[in-house]
Image (cartoon, rainbow, N blue to C red; front, top):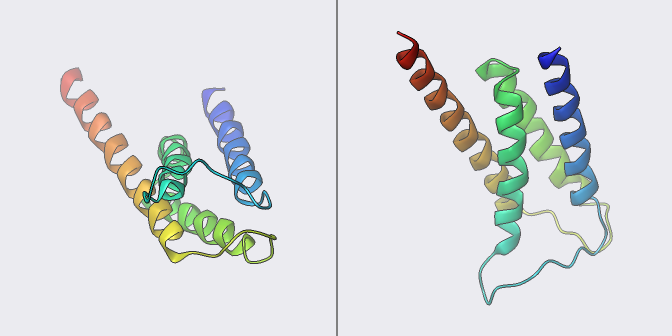
Length: 115
């Protein structure tokens, strides 16, 4: 049952990513010259990574993650007021790597504490 709930949560989160990245002319708060939008990309893909890491092996995790990152960014090619940016994809991919490393580290620590 837990696994089914996690899959549903992952699917809902992926849909949320496409809704957020597909919203036309999304105005995000600006903090002087900081690229805050990269933090948003990092955050949404970090959350997706934490959900997906519990469900998939590394290969499937990264294949799915990179496909979602690419599709979400390519979607912005046809959305008015949105731009395709490689740096957004880098932020998303980095978030996947960080979430996977954190998940694996936590799993290792749990296994050590059980012994």
